[in-house]
Amino acid sequence: MDKKTISADGTSIAYEISGDGPAVILVSGAMSTGGTVAPLAVPLSERFRVVAYDRRGRGESGDTRPYSVEREVEDLAALIDSVGGEALLYGISSGAALVLEAAASGLPVRRVAVYEVPFAVYEGGAEERAEYTARLTEALGQGRRGDAVELFLRLAGMAEQMIQGARQSPMWAGMETIAPSLAYDNAVMGDGLVPRDRLAAITVPVLAIAGSASPAWMHEAARAVAESVPGGSYRSLEGQTHMVEPDVLAPVLAEFFAS
Image 1 (cartoon, rainbow, N blue to C red):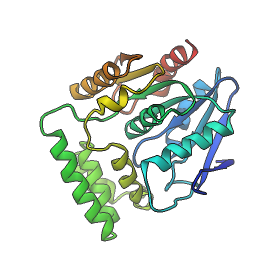
Image 2: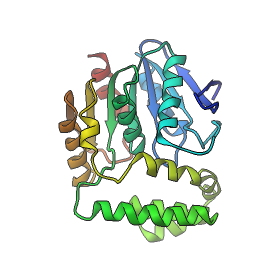
Image 3: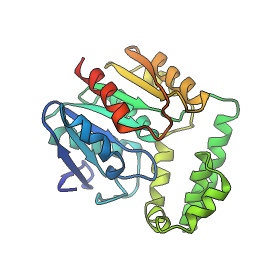
Image 4: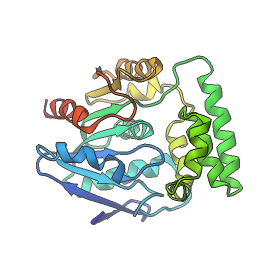
């Protein structure tokens, strides 16, 4: 990350820009940094000025306590100000929940696209989120970062054998480093349910996307988001999963953002 901006609470937010044109800010999900969404910046930068940034508490960005979702919205406000005072927003997974909250908060955004925001639309979803919250809070409070990462991977549906394999891999240390930010993503997700009333406050167009190869509840969640936003629309990407391919997603985003 070669640039930095200062958020309202004094936190340094690291970012990089590629391309030229209308500004598009890419927002990553849990256990990720700006580098995670950087591959998407490559095709988008042919038509847009693309911003990839490290959310607070990860990568090269700072972290100021206490955390609140409002502070992360202020981070986006600082980034928008840095790129001219107006932007288009894209978020994936819990990062999608953050950009929806930013839009509902009235930030100067023109359009918002979200990919597979994991709101629970299935029976027991709220209870599952509440149990995860309690166990995550306990693990992080006791400094058990590895256990916190395991909790998240289980919530994400990773098989136990794969989790244990990941724990023995070289990447595990890096995952433990940003484990405290799991609490931030959890806060962004609220009670885990679709915040219909909050989404109804969004006044800009929103495109909610899901991959056709993802679980059915992901599509239901995307549809629920689209239905809750006055200017919402839904789209399915053929053959895609939660690990969406940048070259497949980028043309869809470019078409929507250029509308």
